[in-house]
Length: 218
Image 1: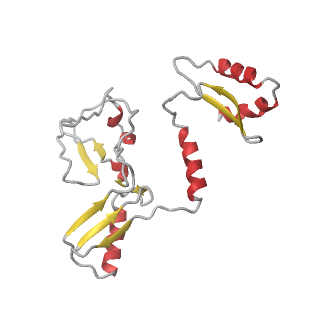
Image 2 (image 1 turned 45 degrees about the horizontal axis):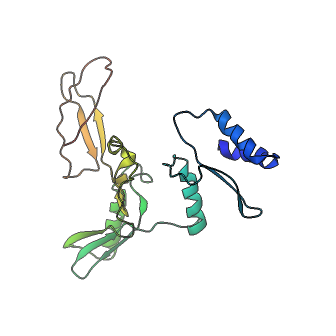
Image 3 (image 1 turned 45 degrees about the vertical axis):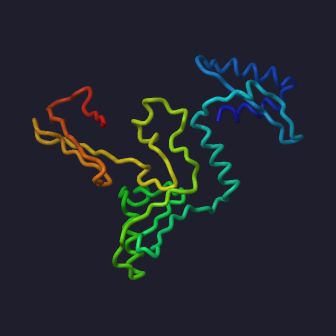
């Protein structure tokens, strides 16, 4: 946002390069690098570049550019449409199609609410039995993790592997509540899944602690 606010006085400045260099110096950025390219929409030419060809890991503000490109290419009315069908072998075929909201985000925080809607749709079409479930994770390239993530990043929910079928942001939510004093905390996972086994080694204590809860995985 700061860059956009700077652009107006820059366009009015007589010496653009000198003015941009002054603004960069005034920003006081230390311990980092910056790449800047200014392009004139009026006559379609580059008017300023500072390390413009340097490959840098983008900051989170790149999502603004990504959203802008998606709006331009897909339009404001675009919607992701996961599809379900039953093949000739009696299997439920589910295609996520890149929908980022297969979660409880719009269903009162219930991550499997969308499955109940699908089950209701199957009943309406008189589907009573299934021989299996086939999840189709096709349509993206083979990259499932950002190559720039550091070793500690996968511990955070926002660094879960991604694909065209992502339930609950590809995360399992852990909720912990205190039990009786001296007893283990009450820990639950959501959505419930046999793929995760909890080993609860917590103990409920009275008073304030500096590190109340932590977890590891094997």
